[in-house]
Image 1 (cartoon, helix red, strand yellow):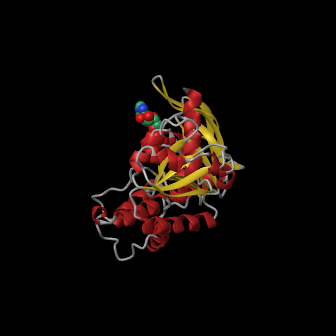
Image 2 (image 1 turned 90 degrees about the vertical axis):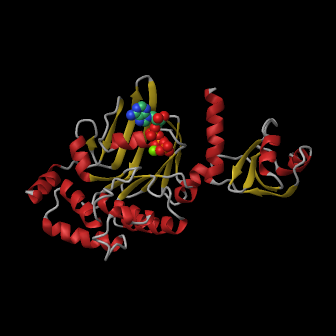
Image 3 (image 1 turned 135 degrees about the vertical axis):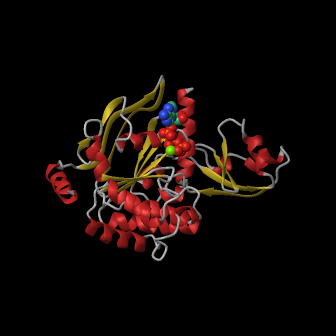
Amino acid sequence: MALGFNRRRQEEAPAYEDAVLVRGLRKDFGDFAAVDGIDFSVRRGEIFGFLGPNGSGKTTTIRMLCGVIDPTGGSAEVLGYDVARDSERVKQRIGYMSQKFSLFEELTVDENLRFYAGIYGLSDEKFAERRAYVLKMADLEGREGEFTKNLSVGWKQRLALGCATIHEPELLFLDEPTSGVDPIARRQFWELLYDLASRGVTLFVTTHYMDEAAHCHRLAFMYEGRLIAEGAPAEVRALMKDTILELSVSDVDAALSALEDVPGVEPYLNGALLHVNVGLRAEREVDLPALLAAAGVRTESVTQVEPSLEDVFVHLVSAERAARG
Ligand SMILES: Nc1ncnc2c1ncn2[C@@H]1O[C@H](COP(=O)(O)OP(=O)(O)OP(=O)(O)O)[C@@H](O)[C@H]1O
Ligand SMILES: [Mg+2]
């Protein structure tokens, strides 16, 4: 039965150029537009980073593309299928690692894998092959019988990836797969993503980590339901020409409030350091140490830095906020 179903599915599969093609897509919840008419495409085989602040509409977009909720407007094709008309076919052919891990805590590692294999109708033979692959990939060999609730977050995350790819999907949606995971486990997880990409799997991933964004082939940045930037990381960086100064100061909070209302100066935190966007002016044209000294803050160093993706997004968001009022 299972094999017959798969074969039929392959025969019917439409040809497609882009793994995802979105036109004017929107989702309204009552009179609130969570996704406000967006257009973009994801090329076959690429790692596509979908970025944006909390509540900007990333998960809502993914849920529409996975056929979980219906769009209220526009259209989206996923692997050549229209998500509104063919949501069942879409669901069978993609993998989805949702923002809240979709694992059953009370089941064992093996039982979770079996559950997902059952959803996708894998034959016993195929399941045995995929199970062995996933256990090795996720470094879970020997832990098949452990209850999922007892696994560390890093292991759970790799098991969730294994469950989402048990049926070897061509396209995988990952919604903040690395949130709450330590830096080493994050790096290991990205190695797994690269490996999938090298096998031709298209990856659609959301993240708040800019180091991860920099590793995507292309990015799209959402803000309040709309796309405000798109392109390869280098292209996105080139969208901003402003000068960014990085300061080490005696009191970061006091520095932020001292610079808050200074015209033409945009201060924000970047890790433990202060970043200040001074627009198109050169460093010497703005005497930040003097402005800070007036507020009792000592400046230890000022360095002009290459704008990072984070600098660009902070800037794009504030420009968009100003434009929308
Ligand atoms: N079922 C729903 N009913 C009403 N509002 C919703 C619903 N689902 C999402 N929203 C709202 O839509 C907006 C976008 O939410 P969404 O979860 O898509 O954001 P996100 O970009 O994924 O955010 P985060 O980075 O926090 O995960 C939010 O304001 C959210 O409260
Ligand atoms: Mg989300």
